[in-house]
Length: 112
Image 1 (spheres, rainbow, N blue to C red):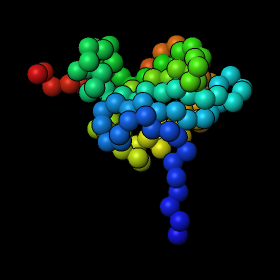
Image 2 (tube, rainbow, N blue to C red):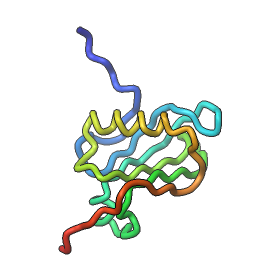
Image 3 (tube, one colour):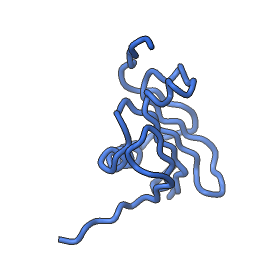
């Protein structure tokens, strides 16, 4: 059986708390190229985004490399399987619009 190649361009190594990547999808009924950053909630906490206690999708302006997209999820890291599931989630979400959209339960962090 032949190995399947990922249908995204990773701009850094997989397996960490943050990953930049590009992939195709749709936005507002048209084909889109996403210039994306995927973050874990733990990463958001340690980089000062204290508001990120819940998962979110943040859609920004279109740029030269694609439309800006930030996704923060309560996952331990972005390995290949988690990246694939996150891309599927974005592609299947039909009501995407510009701005930050919160979802899921609030994450409780241990005080450190």
